Structure formats: structure tokens, C-alpha cells
Image 1 (cartoon, one colour):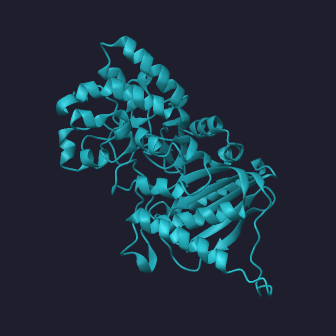
Image 2 (tube, one colour):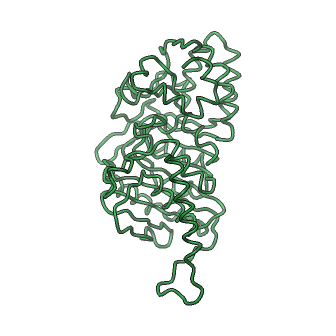
Image 3 (cartoon, helix red, strand yellow):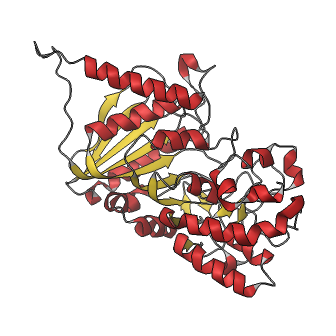
Length: 398
């Protein structure tokens, strides 16, 4: 029903725009015209109407500091929804951060139509041959109704009907109505999981993010703005990684975990993973998770994060040839992963914040069903993911 409603609104908007042109007299207030086509338009979508609102100034200051890295044939647009009314800013080497559009009312930035309208307006007014997207907010990965992406605590007059968080399938449907992105960079916790990447594989070429929590200050935008503009996906990862460990405002951030996913290589990874993983779970069998690298403490609301590579290594301990073959496919799909020199990451929601086996670190998380998750409904929700269907989990009974 949500998707049907979204499609109806899109069709209505298209017809409305088509019928509003009056060629008999010019409008009293000329409608802004789209810019000339650029090489790339980068959109930074900051859903910050939550506890992260205080970090907006820090990151926008970094963006302005790095403005000289923006080439002339690039557009950088920053949508900000914090404790003030939402607005869209243009960032350029010449003018820094300038207001482009001020919204007159509060809106819910995790609502599908709000996000679609914001992104579609930017794409229309700043056309380009390529597009990049940075998604900035709270997040927890794939699981529905658990703050999948974003958090909007002040949703305006329609708060009762607007979602505080955006579910993964809805995020996909919004992005599917836009040009395919060169990359989607999640400057948000827990989004570098295989379930998210597989769901979004048709709307982006690359996905960048962390399988765990990220430090409070997030990405160093003064260091990565050039890489964002040039679609240098490895540069985004490496410059982000180099910023930690570090001190920010007298607070020590021990590290950050990051990886890069090539979405064009995910279908072979799904086939290889399903073929080798599911035999261990037939008839709702439940192998021990001992040795799996967790990204959260046991059985809190975020416990669906195990490192994908470590999980496969432990399950295939006695099948070395199978593991070697799987790693060849995994390395193609995840060509870059970084691990801080401390082998740790900054964590608030979890007592787990260390990579126990750095040699098996994969940089991408994966869900494995367990009976304890029946209580939380996670096993049922897992069945709705594209990854579940592609890997053949249904044959196991889970």
C-alpha cells in the first residue's frame, strides 16, 4: 500500500506539472531554470532532526573548509533537516555554503515522499552526467522498525502519520525513481551489511559505509569532499579511515571500520554464499556462533550483526577449498576494507568494540537466524529481504 501510494503521488505530480504551463503570458515570478549539465552532482542528505543535530555545524564547517577541492563542473548540494526548518544549500569553491532553498514548514525527512521530492528537485535543477549520494543520520542496518535509516523526531503537523525511521524497502523504492548513483555513502552506523547492499544493488554502482557504529564526528568532509566530487570511492574510504583514531573536542575516538562494496559483483556472492552457508542451517539447525565476529553485544536490539567473512571462515573451518573459493568471490565484491590501527571502533550502544581476529576481518556484516530472534520477529522479517530469497534460505526452514 505504501508503494502504491508513492506511485500515485508521483504520477499526480507529473500530470500537475504538465498542465501548469501557461504560454500566453510570462509568470510574475519566473520559475528558476535548471543549471547546465555538469559532470557530477553530489547530494549530501542530512536527516539530523534528532540527537545528531549538534554535529551538523561541525560537518558543514568541514565542508566549507574543503571547498577548494570542488571542481568547476561539479555541483554539491546539502540538504539539512535539524532542529530548525529544513533547507537546501549549495556548496561551491567560489561561494562556500549558500542557501538555495528554504522550506517554510517542518517536514519529515524519513518520509518517502519528502525524500523523493527533495532528491528529485535537486536532480532536476542540477542535472549531471553522474550522481553521488551521501546519507547522513542515525541508522541500524536492514531490520524494519528498528531505525533502519534516519531518525526524525520532529515530524511537524503530520507526526502521527509520518514514519520516524525509513525502512530499507521504502528507501530502495525512493532511490529507484532517480538516476542510478555512482555511489551511495552511508555516513551512518551499521549500514554496511550485505542485506542493505543487496537490496540497493540496482540503484548504485558502489556502496560505502561501516558494519558497526561510527564515531560521533562522522566523516572528515574537509578531507573527502574532493573524492566525493570525483567519485573516487577508494579515496572516500581511505581518507575517512585516516582520520581515526583521533581526538575531537577533548573526546577520544578509537577507530572506525569501513569497506567498499562493488554492487555489480553481489549476485555471484549471493550464489556462492547460499550454496556454502545454508547446508549448515537445514531443518532449522542452529550452528554455534562461537568465533563469529559480533558488532554488538549479545541480544540487544541491534544484535543481527556478525562479520560476514569471519562467519564463513568459522563455518568452513574443515572445508578449506570451499572457503578459498568463496573468498575469491568475496574479494571481488568487497575490494577494500579498512581496519583502524587499534583494531577497535568507537561504540556507544555496545560493549563490543574490538575486532578479535584482524586476519579474518571482512568489513561487511551479515544476519544469521537463531531461535532467540523469533521473539523479536527478526527471523520473519529476514524472510522479506532480497538477500534471503537470493541465497536460498527458504530451503532451510528458517
